[in-house]
Image (cartoon, rainbow, N blue to C red):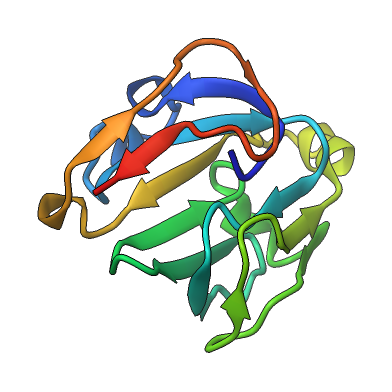
Length: 144
């Protein structure tokens, strides 16, 4: 897992684009420690200006979107720090985004973080171990 926290099935995320899997298959995690780590060795394919999301291209070609929180684009980068740049190679476990979780929640935002395989129609995406606490580094999804 790229974050420590509570596993949330994507269908239960309080955002229709994610819950209806319009962007792709995946999982969500309600983080507990204010940072997102690379879930796999990858190349950073996008960094959103408002610093709440990054895109990764994994070694197998899977395109992963990591979106910290729901509607957090409205914070315009406040409380977020992106630690990577486009084109950067990252290793599994390397920090991608740090964020002030308490400040974001105090501002009324849900920090549930979807991890979506944007090209999931090209892969077999298998979800693992639902409805429990997850630790950093613990697998929650297999993409093959």
